[in-house]
Length: 111
Image (cartoon, rainbow, N blue to C red; front, side):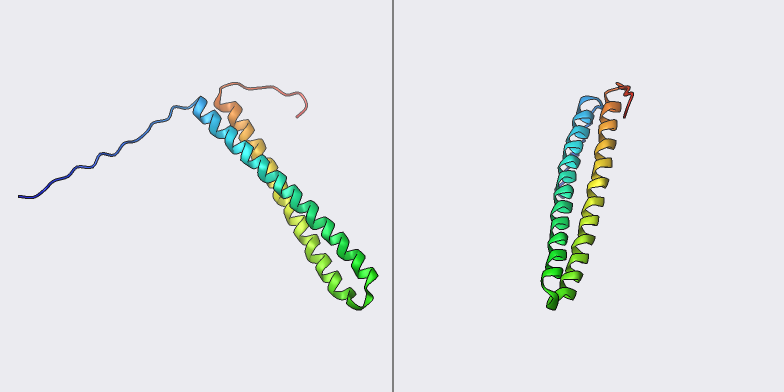
């Protein structure tokens, strides 16, 4: 004589439409936020690269170190810019998916 237990598994079925639309809009908002962070990172790294370029001219004894730091900052700026570009396209993809989830197809002439 043993003890029997039963487990009940509940699955939630989410219908498309509004919930799917809200999910896409939320993801779109997240990608927009990440895009802005990438843009800010690119701006900051670019500004630091320009600062190091100026320091290389101003401080000839340590010019080599400043040039190396400038190149690293420039590389970081390009990487952050690429990340922002990627997030921009993810945002556009989620925007398009949100429109398609509602069944409406908006026609844009320029864009």
